[in-house]
Image 1 (cartoon, rainbow, N blue to C red):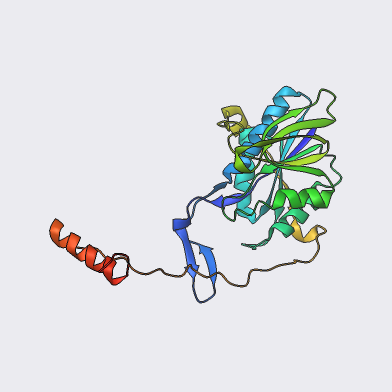
Image 2: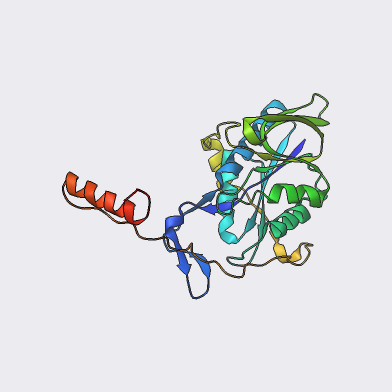
Length: 260
């Protein structure tokens, strides 16, 4: 069985981002730290657990982005992935979910993957779109928000439970190949073993230029980012307890919240 895990690089904290009001863009500051999307860590861990149950399984990790993204691909190798694929884009290219899905599909097509896993969403944009779009492009079945999975004995199907609204779960059986987006809590991602860390340092990543992959023209583009509108300033009431009570009653009456 061949398993592909889609991982994404995200910033660690929004506090290090810089908002350029003149350009309407958010850029990364000098102290911005990047790491693997935590939801994708659960997807990778689930792939590794499948490999432990099926000794013949192979796990590949793929990510799209600038040269800096190679670090999180090596992190996937450190956790135990067999092979890393980097779809390299020039600089800090802003990609939509549609573009990411098509680039991953172009790189994955023809490799014979039986199962594609991804996190249920990315922490930076929270769109939850790449997994379902990837399934549509590859013409695979898809289940989102998966909290449990089990491969059948013959390796031709996967039984899943997915979270739905109201705290309920939906049970499905999908024929392979298919795409699953993994919800947090399905497992506990492992710490890298020393042997895997040493192997990851010397492993050569497969780099594919995004410009060489077949992808349709963008269907959307980022026009501008605006900060949220400022709300009204609050008022702090000073003075002794009786004075503050009198002031509060007066304010409430002025706003017709108490009878005069």
